Image 1 (tube, rainbow, N blue to C red):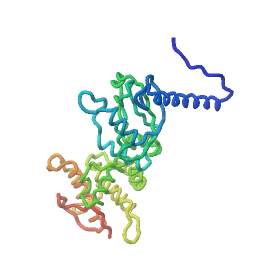
Image 2 (cartoon, helix red, strand yellow):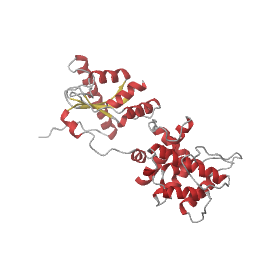
Image 3 (cartoon, rainbow, N blue to C red):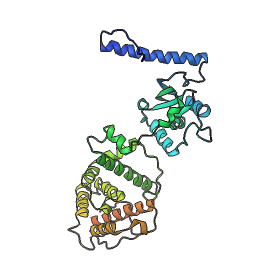
Length: 336
């Protein structure tokens, strides 16, 4: 027989909401009393399953990780922690971009942490308290069904949050990738390195959103007008053109129309002749076999970016370009 919680008849929706709020506060107060009486081992240990929304301080996070979590050896209660994921969450927390109202940590019926160690470590590293949902008293056998669904990609998260407006899944994927790969290139160049020199840079959602806003016009145009030729859809090539698109020359003139025409002609290819930087870049992209030139992926990305910027520089200065080799690269746009 199913048991139901009976509530008194309420006069209005507002009265029902107040009663629900009262019931939730009562659960929190009862649990706090159990902790104070020492019936349970710690603030997130419960003899029955219940959920609270509470502030987790760095001190509490440290206590949970030190005494009620293990991710090594035969007694591990969690999988190995991803340092990169933790650093990204920590950076989001410092910037106020962590949303605990859609995040839940889980503790089993013995008070051991089942899920949430990365977020707790991020709280500790960022030294910022965060509000999160905490579900306690979950049977440990439930671990067999935890986190087995398909993980949302970055593009999924941005699209579902409305950051990209009304776009398809495919468009969202290209928006996010172009913004992220543009950031990878520019962060490295700003640090005096080749673009894509390091692929372990922590990039936050806020930074991706800002880059998307900066390159919104070229990213939308490039996404809506992608080539069917795989060689012309290389991300560094598209990102380099997008970066030129938002540049201004020394006279303050916008490069948007020139960059758009450059992209259109690159895709069409019917107006190009030998010696034209566009022709040379197009032929290189369509004929190169990246698997046979003995470079790593990040070196290949750097070459693709460098060749594109080099072709742009030659094009804007009306100079001839007949060959692109490993040392024929430019990493910064130089406008006349």
